[in-house]
Image 1 (cartoon, helix red, strand yellow):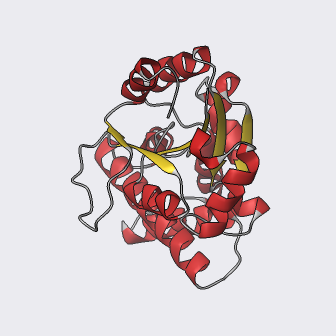
Image 2 (cartoon, helix red, strand yellow; image 1 turned 180 degrees about the horizontal axis):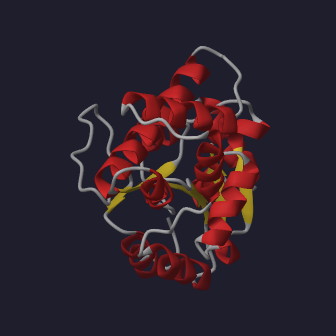
Amino acid sequence: MAVLLFDSQGTLVDNYTIADAIEPYVTGARIAQAISYDWRQRQKWYMCYTTCADYKAPMPVLNEAAFRWALEYHRVTLPEAAITEILSKYQQLRAYPDVPEALQSLKAQGHIIKIIANPAKFMLEGHLEYAGIRKYIDEVVSNSEEEGVFKPHPKVFQLGLRKAGVPQDQCLWVTGHFWEAVGAHRQGFKTAWTNRALLPPDRIGFTPTYTITTLLELAERLEKQGGKV
């Protein structure tokens, strides 16, 4: 049995499914998908540079700023009511297809599953419930609320270790982001990088403990190892 510390967005749930909420307000699926992509990329950039600059801004504020930036970038003007409606749907992100079965398997193996993630806790709770996977999660932690920083700041991983409550060699940090795995590794964690997009790794001298394309692969590998990470 181990404690698995999961990221959420881009690992368990798919940010780009927000395009479904955007599409009714624009000219079609293609522009909705483009806006959702640039929204997410800008959101990640905002979290990175505000943390580096020690500039405190809550995740909902950054999320709205990133959405408004993406609309402006694509020269799309929406009524304020539409913007409010779309932002409210950011708590309704769908799980990746492999996730429910994988989490069920990991729980059946006896692992403890905790979320350590950037969004505000109400955002995390919302999309985990909407995706139908909240029942597999033992604890949900918003590092931006508890520590005031975003990943990959070292404080996030130190928080994760405290929340795990077990020796670090009994923990596994699970993420869909290579850069997050680097941060976890730097703080002494074993790491699992879920590379669904089949991206090449960054050639910087670091290799995750596990590189898998779905979380089902991780569940199968841990089962073969008798639950050890």
